[in-house]
Every structure is written in structure tokens, then in C-alpha cells.
Image (cartoon, rainbow, N blue to C red; front, side, top):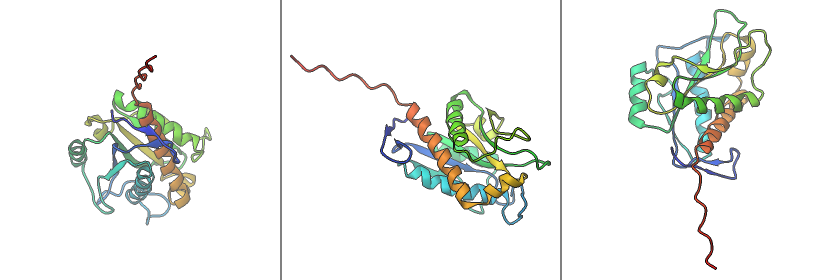
Length: 212
């Protein structure tokens, strides 16, 4: 794995040398889930959050690549091909959830392979520690678990699928369309990402003893 170092910045890490792809959900004709405001479909909100996350990750020195533009759409095969061509050290998929009921709420960090579990766990823990999402048991869907996400199963690098709140839940949606809340979400994911990369550091050899 790419070797990073600690640093005196907001995330405590220098991720220079690490390449991260942001897999931005939906786009083009696929607008994804809708909330109370049809002017802000999931595809647009995914891109908005991805831009903020890109900015936060670049503060650590990481190279961040977006796999689509604001209005561009990609199918699953195109997403996989882009991921395999870039060969990043980590891929974070940005989505927002939806449901036929307005009750479910919360954040999800999902993994499809064993080598993605740790990255998902760090991102989940950092996000939940940021106190962005409600933990009210009624409709609670804060989840860290396996998911069948196609892009993650076809990847050679760790992939974390994030579901950043429910478009169908009024409380979650108010945060989804709020700039400051999106900044907090981006910072939390970036913090978990930095902690994940720091956990991959190999033990450093002990220096040779000074000659007597």
C-alpha cells in the first residue's frame, strides 16, 4: 500500500502519493432519488458533495479524480473501466439513499470485498463521530455492512460505497441541501480516509546503534 505520513494539518496526515477516485453516483439521464425539492435530485447532490470532498482530500496532498462531470452520466461498465484504468489507492462512491417511506434516515458505509472493510469502517466511524446524522431508533439506518455494489465487486482496489442520508427523509434532506452540513460530511469522510491511510503504514526499522 501507498505509504503516507503524519502531518500538522486538520487531518493529521500527508497523503501525497495517494490517488483517490470519487465515483459519483447517477448523472445524465439517471437522476437517482428525489427529495422535497425536485431542483435538487440525487445526481446533483452527489456531485455537489463530491466537489467538497475533493477539496478536503486535496488539503492532505492526495490526488483526487472525479469519474464524471456535473451533467455526465456513466453506466456500471464505464465506471469499472475508469477505475481499472486509473488504478487508484482507494475509491469512494458518493450516493444518497431513498425509500418509499419518509421514516428511514441515516448514513451508510458499505464494502463488497474483504480488502475494503477497513476503509469503510474508518469512514463510517469518523462520520458517526461528527454528529451529523440522527441516531433516533425510529427509522435508524446508520449502517456499516456488506453491499452488492457492482463497481466495488469488480475493483482491484478498496471501494467504499457511501450513502449520505435519505432524500426521502425530511430531516436528512434538510442537511442534504444545506451547504454547511455538506462541508461537515466532506470533512468527516476525509478524516476517515486519512485515518485509513495512516493505518496502512509499515513499521519503520530501528536505527542502527551509534558505535561506541
